[in-house]
Length: 391
Image (cartoon, rainbow, N blue to C red; front, side, top):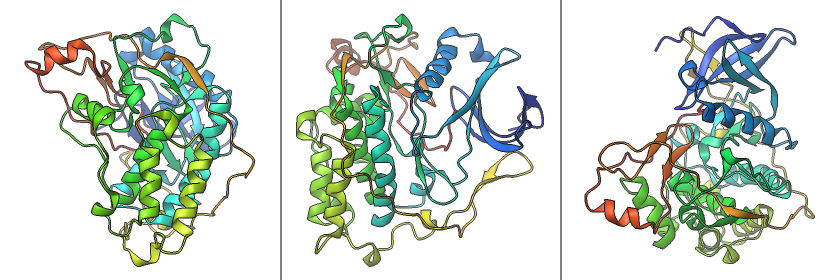
């Protein structure tokens, strides 16, 4: 698809290619002329720029990330508006997203541990600043050219104490991606940091097994499974997952928040012990993701048409152990993480609005309107989102 912004300048940034496109925005590879550096430029399209709700999301993401200064959180350099289109300039992550690598098969255990060792302190740090991510998934974990892992996309993060009416949470809809949504988030209940840790557990299962624990053909049925279903055995899918590692997964996916790990760093410490213990997951005895190992990934570069490709043979991860004393307590959110549904498609569909970047907006599990519509409502779109750097 031809992009009419490629080659043009926006607010001091010359757009050189397209990194990814989502339902809300497009992310471009751009060069900041004043500093002669490459950045990722997220631009809200004109058709959405006129919608105040989308513009406020941009503003909220900037406001939240501005409070978070951590080596494993993608920093925002600049933001502004050009010709009526809001944009955000961020650090360019040349290694792509975790879900790009996952698309080529399960990851080796040391890769998973290295990624989690880096992002766990960042997530706990965000929680210590009263910020819940609420949309953790492989596409929101970005990698640099050395294998460093970074959290990104705080567009639907919840800032504790934010009473802005535009962010008010009601019982009419839940924001998030059902495949990674905690049971309490799916039900529209109050959240704390352990909701994000549940998403880490979902990701852990997926990274080691190459598939998600709960899969179905509608967002609602996936959300119901998060609330009611027992996760399948990871060992039955990947025999190289040992009982010790599987227990870490099961504990991370407990339905009750108080039964999960209290912090991300504690979860990673348990995972490290499980992997390194006698009989633990031996990454050298299995062949996951050998076609495109994260340890062998080079920067992405724009093709003439603005596309991006991955090439092999880049430096390996540098393991980073989290500080042993960095364990912030879980942070509470006084309001359930749901938002009003703004539009309803014909046919009484379960999904009131689908946004390719933000995931699905669904009503809380248990809502009587679900029970009525499941019998006669139209089928909803499956939860499938794999693109890197989605806008």
